[in-house]
Length: 129
Image (cartoon, rainbow, N blue to C red; front, top):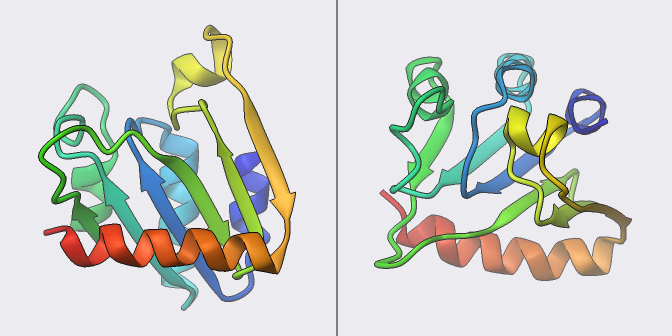
């Protein structure tokens, strides 16, 4: 469902990802960036080089992807789509989250909430490298 949401975006996708190993989601983000959408991603630095992590592939594909500047864990799992859809919860963007873990994910259609998450995204994004 998250891949479908990303593929359905029309203008922008912003993502905060603690753990991100989903090839399908990574491919969808790369496709949307290639189609001209604004795609910005911040990954937790401690997870970015882990087995199967998408960070290097996204960076190599030329996406605007950064590592967080947090001294601790950036434990966020958030997508902000078209400034009106917010995806959040305990769901890491991984196969384990999708197939074996007992995760939760909430999709909220709210420009107001998206604006609040966008402000938090901007703060984390600016601190990243």
